[in-house]
Image 1 (cartoon, protein in one colour):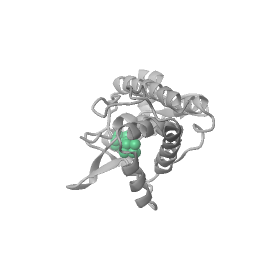
Image 2 (cartoon, helix red, strand yellow):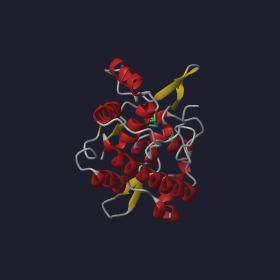
Image 3 (cartoon, protein in one colour):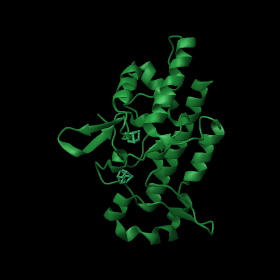
Length: 217
Ligand code: SF4
Ligand code: SF4
């Protein structure tokens, strides 16, 4: 059941990436090259459900134990455990598991919510706004608004997949840990047969967002 859920989450991620691509093309918005500010935030949150594809991938690639150990060591910091800083630049870095990143990592900067009049409003990323101040409010008057992905829609889609695992948002490291423990238990109880897994996403084939944060090499 968990594996099937992980596959459904990945299918939703494909839709989210496609929605972001459409909005990016219609609006002209994109992240500055190399920006990873959202990954540096300690406020990134996810549900356990969103991290199931990552957990299956980490077990299949024998990285799960290492990540669990790093999570234990990093207790006290909420910065995402998957972020790999650049040695030469304290503010630079990349996502080490880009194809399995959480929903908010896909939507941030390219999604919004309805205002009190039911009109979609982009939730601007601070960095993008600094880069393109001219885009500000006029953006929503043009055709791009029709393509604006809504956080609510994708959040509801996650919750609908599994109301228990897909509702409670928590700091992303806790969500990753929870997903790893759940998948680890399933694998222990029912070791998988040696066959290609539908939830396994090779890191060299990211789902493709027209924006950053970057994926690690
Ligand atoms: S959404 Fe893009 S521009 Fe905004 S902080 Fe993240 S990577 Fe930077
Ligand atoms: S993009 Fe990757 S490193 Fe950045 S917050 Fe999301 S999962 Fe973590």
